[in-house]
Image (cartoon, rainbow, N blue to C red; front, side, top):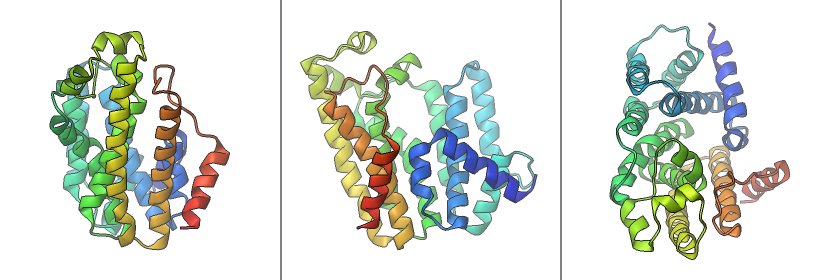
Length: 273
């Protein structure tokens, strides 16, 4: 498979599976856009394996093979071909890509988190690592804020995907916070949006916003097009969180959908920064 064909495949995957993300990277120059799509496609592959229907043993084998593939030069897998080329062009840290696999493996072994500190470590693997990998493509060395931004987006995902995660047997809201607010896993199973649930989720949302504000300090170190990319998908995530809050945190009927017009307005807001 040619490199161009591999990049074409990962960009098609990004447009199909991550439309919000695709809106952000469309403003990047070609080489950066293709590299970010390759990183996304690799992360998506990890998620698809971890969240799939295979037995846990088979998932573990596939994830470990995906991690080992980072050390193999020749491949006919379009995701690996595109990622290898991106790594040859940009200083994408191998450790950040391995962290993604570690996060997928953690999902096989751990479905509950006692405290936010425990959850934060997981978020750094599955999302902070994406930020670290991408910031190398953007051309900044501000790894700290890039990781924080990735964690912020994962925290928004956790708020958005409560129902989906429950169906996968996972609860990412820290157990001590569930207990503190008087919310049980039975409430999650039943989709009950009580006052206690709304208070708990408002707390989760405010923490996500705090991480988002901190992570967006990254923009100060980016060139204009990279900054527009980051501000766009951060804006889309923020808009999603705003919609969830406006619906009183009733996330049990599926995630809110942003219209194409809303997305274009967010891109426009970034252009006016």
